[in-house]
Image 1 (spheres, rainbow, N blue to C red):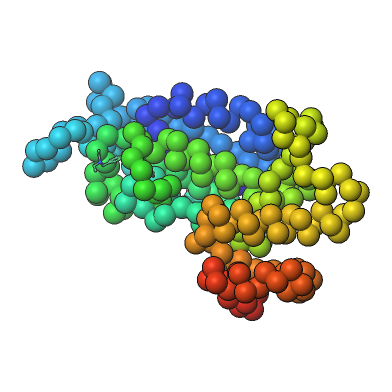
Image 2: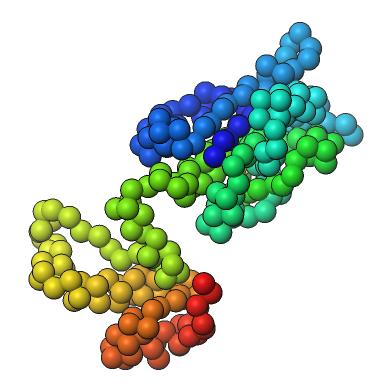
Length: 257
Ligand code: 9D3
């Protein structure tokens, strides 16, 4: 996967890419990330990237020409990427969108600033607008980082098998079970006894029940979409939990995959 990121604040994007899994994926050339300073594509001697809105009003608007020149330069280097504008008006981002975009091999992420971007640039150059949620950021840079982070970890070979263990939880559609590590007793709180039993079956049952409890308590709206294997359903039936799940809106629908 190649990401090209267009921004007037390249410094905002540098350090998140220099640590952890993203750094490792860059070193292994599983992902390539090119940051472009929009200011380098400004035409006038002051390198202006924004201007006052036609019709008056608060704030500034990003000028179309530097953005268009930056996209043209990216296309010269690597044709054919999907151009995404990070914008409060965009399609809501979630794991399904991340999985969809992880299938592509080139994304061009345009980070807006100020009150917005000249609509003519959007009309001609932008394939899609994406928002990362209903809260107000100061610009698209952190949103672009959220996309790079969430998409990169989905690319083949980026996560080791151990890291990708959360796959089973996502496939179940609810929250993950609580985790514990040493010390066994922390500030008078002991970790659950079953985790020391050495009984892998008992641990699996405890984790299954803990996931249902976590989801019902913290994210009840996710319960209706939870999916269980035949083996898990047998356990839940034995535990008398199916009625409780149904009360919470759960329906035993056939698996989607
Ligand atoms: C105060 C200005 N707002 C008027 C209601 C409009 C506005 C313009 C630009 C609000 C935020 C921004 C900057 N935000 C982004 O560029 C952005 C964003 C966001 O704010 N929330 C969630 N996802 C995204 S993606 C890009």
